[in-house]
Amino acid sequence: MVNKKGGLGKNMDSLFGSNGISKQALEHSKTITRVADDAEKVVDLPLAKIEANPFQPRLKFDEDSIKELAQSIKENGLLTPIIVRKAGAKYQIIAGERRFRATKTLFAKTITAIVRETNDETMATLALIENLQRDNLDPIEEARAYANLMSQLELTQSKLADRVGKERTTVANALRLLKLPDKVQQLVQQGELSMGQARALLGLEKESQLNSVLSVVLKDGLNVRQVEALVKKANAGDKPKQPGKQPSPFAEDLANRLEDKFGTKVKVNAGKKGSGKIEINYVSNRDLERILEILAIEVD
Image (cartoon, rainbow, N blue to C red; front, side, top):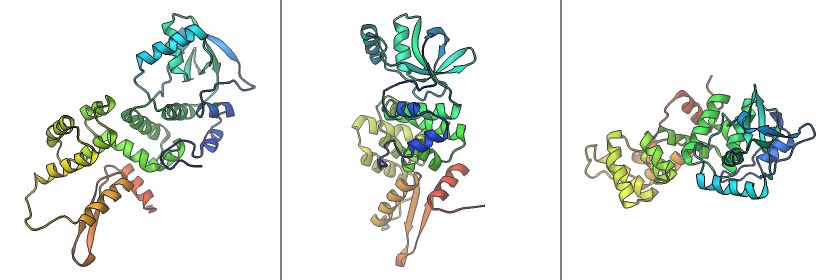
């Protein structure tokens, strides 16, 4: 059953089976159990020959949790081998980077591992899925991982969403965060801004407004709806006022719902006698292709 709120599991068996990953590797993305299949062996590898996963989407590792894991390994041993692949004279981690880091702090020389054959596409996808399932990625890391996979595998947002078992709108909304200035992305990573607050800031029409709006958001602890209202107010302050003309509540509500569906800025101008106009913004050809896919429009 597909989790409509973005849970993983959608088409997982077909995804991994079609990319040459064993049943055990599929289980790696679903549970914390690690076992070798009939063609693999559990071996002890020198730590000096092991490298991090080049497709690892997680950039920050909590040092306290690494210390706790190291203490557990010291007392109980490494209960679950890490998974690696051969890369020249060295080995790259497919799964188990926290266990690898914790073991290094114990000044061990070797670590128990399963050597598995896998390609870049499978490795990149598996690394992202494993982190997503464990909620280890902050919103910016997740967005960057999506962007990297789209680039590496030449996928549209819809195809990427199918690949990782997420709703397309979830992927689209995550990718929108990468349009934010670096300082705002850092605030999201530090937990000072939520994903919803950050997305609301994307509605600002002038970047020069950002500092003042951001200052109010952080100082007053505004929720998402309040940030959206503040952004609208900031935008309206740079436009000539039109006395007597009030925005249509219907148009505003429709615009908000369309923005959620398309993952981009949408304007709805309601005219007289039921007429009107809808404007859907896009920022690149790829973004346009994504919107056309949602509308089920094919363009040669």
